[in-house]
Amino acid sequence: MSHAVVELAQAPDLPSIGTLHARAYHPTREWHRRIFPTSVAPWWEYKYSLDIADPNNYVLKISFSDTPTTVLGLLSLRKYAANEKGAGRWTSCLPPPEADREAVDTMVKAMIEHRERYMLGRVHLCIDHFGVDDAYQGRGMGKTLMAKACEIADAEGLDIFVEANEFAESFYKSFGFEEEDRLALPPDGVTQCFLIRRAR
Ligand SMILES: CC(C)(COP(=O)(O)OP(=O)(O)OC[C@H]1O[C@@H](n2cnc3c(N)ncnc32)[C@H](O)[C@@H]1OP(=O)(O)O)[C@@H](O)C(=O)NCCC(=O)NCCS
View 1 (tube, rainbow, N blue to C red):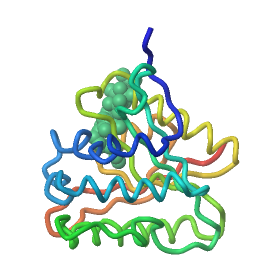
View 2 (cartoon, helix red, strand yellow; view 1 turned 180 degrees about the vertical axis):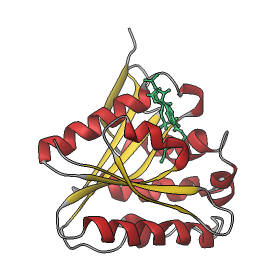
View 3 (tube, protein in one colour; view 1 turned 60 degrees about the vertical axis):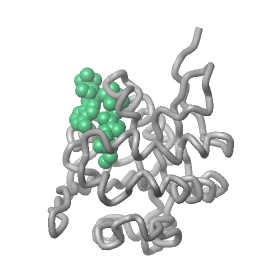
View 4 (cartoon, helix red, strand yellow; view 1 turned 90 degrees about the vertical axis):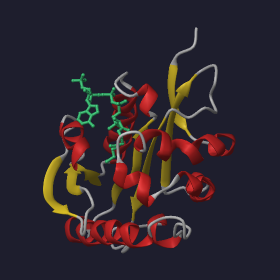
């Protein structure tokens, strides 16, 4: 019988990964609809083709065992060196012109400032992207992905940093993340929370 499985994503998953952000965020998040329109799907595919090939990235996907390349949820975890600056792929692989670059830049700048403030000086993990297809939310898939991410972090003895939208804050706290700061992104963006989960 088919069951949900978490695995590291691979190249055949990329077409489905390209549409995951829109499937996870667009139905309920106007801001995300505006900044990452559905037309940027090829960019997500390209970005994730680089992440999948990068040993510093864990691109975790959840899918049903009988349809493994239909990605229903994704959690991308990037390992940063102790003194690595910037925001990884978010700064080295910029989204195309259809994205609202001003809004993306504001979000990425906030990520850089806060990650560098709280995490520089030690190797750590950072959640780059996390979402579950809206049609499958509330069935435990997000929890399964996050449990795997925490298992990886604990096995490596690494803290996890995340810039999360305020809607997901209580979800993160239920996994032991603690809020360090929050910021309303100008001019009309969502409130972002900056949270850290210490390795166990
Ligand atoms: C946040 C998200 C990934 C959670 O995935 P999910 O598969 O819906 O979550 P689960 O079904 O595993 O829910 C696990 C628990 O978290 C709760 N939960 C789910 N979404 C939540 C949210 N946005 N905020 C707070 N709690 C949430 C559920 O009620 C459930 O609680 P319970 O175990 O006490 O019943 C998903 O709702 C999503 O993709 N949302 C849109 C994108 C987003 O906000 N991503 C987070 C990026 S910062």
